[in-house]
Image (spheres, helix red, strand yellow):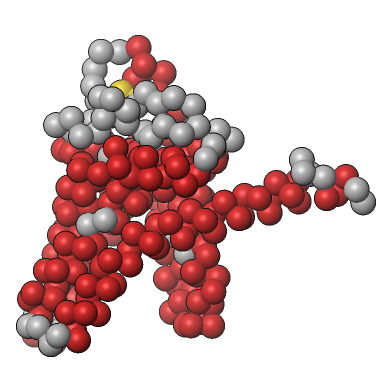
Length: 261
């Protein structure tokens, strides 16, 4: 029984990993608070819809650096290399801030555009549009979602430009398509749970809604990343150059940084 509760036992390692995921999830949610505050305050001030959406959009850009920091930590966890989680998260957040914000701006803008198109296709006014065209729009929307799943993990692991990161996300989404499907499915699990169970699962979603699916995604994209890392360290090509980082506390991009355009 003593060994069962030993610090190195599977049970204690599993509980420790769950605690780490809870903390990572809360760190990400902290970065979402500004967007929620701005949205609530602007609604209370009864501002027109456009300013409300614009201010909320600007505040929501913090999700980019937050997701980059999260994926940096989660990949370390998968590889059993994690160190000081909070320090590493915010160091990565700071070092990759500018480029992650730009990526978030692009992802959110494209997401809003695609979501608007999909919504319009469900209205009666668009019922005359050919079925094949509707299916094509839906397929494009799904694939754009899959590409977005790779953007911030790539940003966290590789040094590249904004367009280079997006291009690599597009390529990896295709090259590792079965893994991409798994990542998409896991990312949608919290949404599905909330749809069916609502606020009854709020405490669980508060603790794991972002970090737990992200951890499973890290398990999936880890092997894909390893295919490029040895080549990245030897080749002069910048396409998949691994970000150099000291042990434990360093972010994905160090002095050369992901901010290099």
